[in-house]
Length: 296
Length: 137
Image (cartoon, rainbow over all chains, first blue to last red):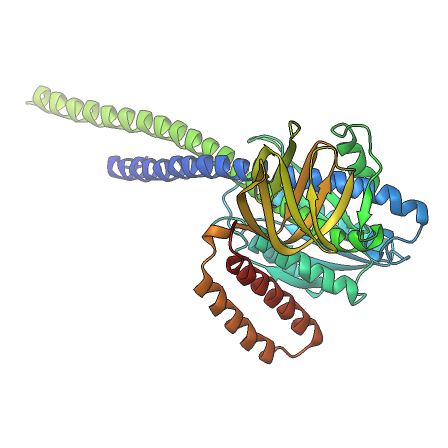
């Protein structure tokens, strides 16, 4: 049986753990709110760009010679996967599920005889994938948007992807990230970035657009598209990063909420044990005194 | 001029302005164009320059944008800007310093790619400087 002192120490340590986890929960909650606001603020731009792209793409597709970012390189041999995880742990299954999905994708592509390259964002994905697929990682980014995620951060990554694409380093590029659904639910999403799939986005945006007007283009469609597509890539990366940031905070909030509750349960249990043990000691001592008195 | 156009200025990070105005003049890459209500639908690229917002024949707002895209419909003018800053807030000395710094970067640049990127940045900074030079009406 543990001594009273041991129990007391354990209760104290669990109590301080609970303090930490509940503080982390609060912090995550406020960060989550900020991340959500930021995601909201970025939406108008993405929406309008989607609208422009859809009408542009409709025009260019007719002519049949769009830029390479949209039509692709004509093969799908080399895949680049952008894996977005977090820099810090203690956020439940957030990083685990990203890494699991990434492994699945990598294995599927490898078994199809494709070449896979990885670009990881966040320390956790790199650390967990390095052992198995270290040779596949071409680039890693850490501390992205540590303070506040800015568009410039996303742009850096997008520029890297573009320069790889122009150098012919890959044919297809997808991003794997946690899409924010609610504080308790994050959905691991795989989204293809290059070649750009117009249909998927066009459908999404179609609901919001009025009767499609025939636009004039200045300069011509192809030139605009050639400028718009790289920008769109940055936007998509930015969006993925925002979603991921919100998801991370959501996951952390839930995980820390659970931890706080578990610590509470544990404290209750330990307190009961502590009280029982204390009583047992008292009873024992009483018995000793009484039997001592009787013996006299 | 009873009809107004809905002028929207959007950066990737947030919606900057959304207001009905009489006219906006946007620096398109193939020349400035003014947008009044009932303008024919158009999509254009935007070069670094100043957007003038008109309210009853007077400029009420001048915003510098570092390039982007503009979408015009009969009732709306949307500018997707990469960077937007009110002309009044541009610090001339700071921009001059920036140009000098970029000039040094240009000398350090090794590859053509790098050079092109720095040159683009310089062009933006120059345009910014020009924007402060042009006096408001």
